Image (cartoon, rainbow, N blue to C red; front, side, top):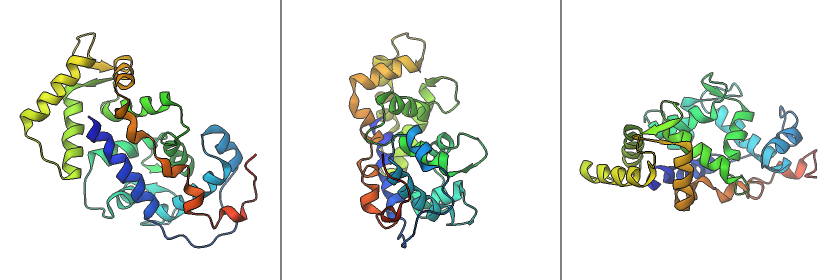
Length: 226
């Protein structure tokens, strides 16, 4: 199951590398960065940096100030032809309005979970939802297998079906303490706390350094990080 979360590092690294940013004054169109900073773990400067990244991604296909799934795929794989269950799950979890596009606040709030300073409970909750494909409040064996197979395919790794089944069987034997054939949120939390490596890729250090990566617009910020 660790491999399924490994895709996050590649995913967000690709997002940050996909843009060659030009110099900006204070970001036009960004409303109340202070409020969004209060409601996430980002600083005001980090919010402004994320907004410049967002503008580049949201104009990749349709310049409408929103990120659609195709633009999300382009940022992830540099192509819109590759189908990805993993990318779909991340997009759907970011898309809290369930309208098929991401506004900036959805984008920033989604990335906030991966910030080094984000509470561990947020990381556990997001990783649980990633596997809960049917949004039932629990994870079934087949859902785990779907995510494992999809992520292995994306990373170019090939494991025999019996090996995958063995991994899943051992995971459920350890995790499914209620022995009801599914993993609920409490069981998932206990698993993650016993095996913190499952959340290793839920923390992206470069989100804390985004103002260093993209400093040009931060120098012209109209809001102080206070």
